[in-house]
Image 1 (cartoon, protein in one colour):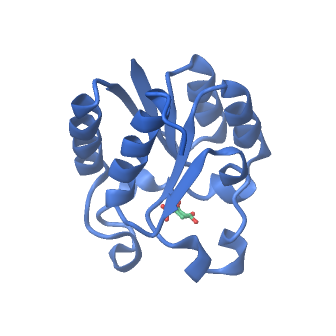
Image 2: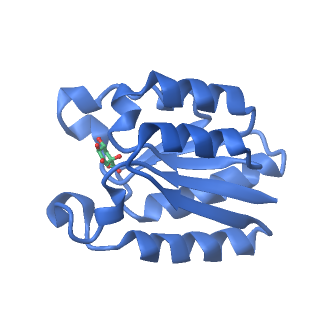
Image 3: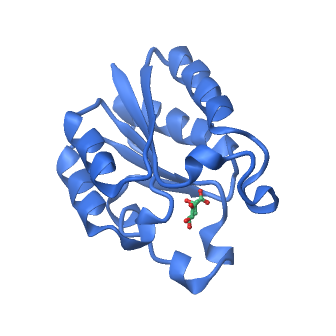
Length: 144
Ligand code: DQA
């Protein structure tokens, strides 16, 4: 099975974007780590990033065995992405590099988190690996 690891706007700039907040690990490095962790659980990875809300919706609609998503700012704004995920019918784990609860009030609401099975935030790039581990467990039929 192949899982979708989907990344929203500005995450293509990881490594150079506000490194004091988001760290120095690049999205390419995160992709490599995701492939390693997923392969260890017999999963393939379709790793994508888009700055466009509709492209993210399209990617979700293409279908996957499960989804790890960092919707970035669209977590806080996009009902369309939330609705696409709610319709996907597969396990979903949301990731944010930063601890949203420590940040501005406008980041404290995530429409997409509200329909996800689990949310990992504040673990930096490591959060993607944690999310994949949990997604693999959900796909194995483990109940949390
Ligand atoms: C983010 C948090 C969002 O609030 C922000 O808009 C991002 C990145 C994170 O990974 O910490 O772009 O999703």
